Amino acid sequence: MALIELNQVGKSFAGKTGPIHAVNGINLAIEEKDVYGIVGYSGAGKSTLVRLLNGLEAPTNGQVLVNGEDVAKLQGAALRTFRKKVGMIFQHFNLLWSRTVIENIQLPLELAGVAKEQRRKKAEELLHLVGLDGRGDAYPSQLSGGQKQRVGIARALANDPDILLCDEATSALDPQTTEEVLELLANINQQLGLTIVLITHEMNVIRKICNKVAVMELGKIVEEGSVREVFRHP
Ligand code: ADP
Ligand code: ADP
Image 1 (cartoon, protein in one colour):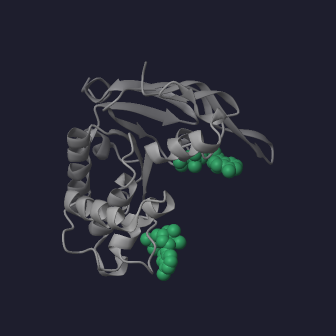
Image 2 (cartoon, rainbow, N blue to C red):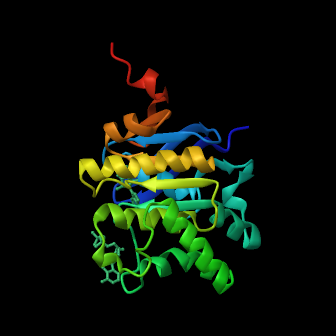
């Protein structure tokens, strides 16, 4: 069984002139350790798909299965465990600007009730992993865009997730910085065996690190397969 499975998944919203099918009958299988890219223009349904994957939205149709469990049915402790297993990074980093780098990274651990000493130790390890040794006491405003995203990545990894969801994570970065952040993500995928799902409107991001890709248009997947197949030259 695949780590993530979508079976005929649909998500509709009420619109002025009728329902908007943001996600419309999607089938998808993402295997453990995949770096899976989902690419499409603005409005294709990518963000909605991300919110279905992390359980922030429930599908109107079909099922989202992670590790064989129906995400929409999770409650209480099972839901909290699931949330820890899925880390997220964002286009605008979503860091807390009044807290230092190390405090930002420790936040998920604090929320999970991890003891102070252990939080500090884990955060130091993560700082090292993302190449920010010695920057723990800086504030996000003192960092470059690439460094901010490294903090975002460290924070997303704090609870040792199995899956990392990247929502336009390099879209605010210049090409050189994008390349560096993608390299870090590729290393994390290899070193930690993490499964990465990466949403983007940029084809070259997909080409750079994904092994599989799905192309979305108007809520549907119009093409899917290995990056080599989908981007082959005719
Ligand atoms: P993308 O991330 O690819 O730009 P979205 O998932 O944000 O696409 O949007 C897909 C479609 O669903 C768009 O037409 C958008 O306007 C619509 N949509 C998304 N979220 C909502 C919502 N909460 N309410 C109404 N319409 C929505
Ligand atoms: P944008 O403003 O384009 O979303 P930013 O990188 O400036 O991108 O902001 C990232 C996130 O941090 C946003 O969610 C924003 O609300 C929040 N944020 C920005 N500035 C501050 C601030 N001074 N204090 C607290 N939160 C902030």
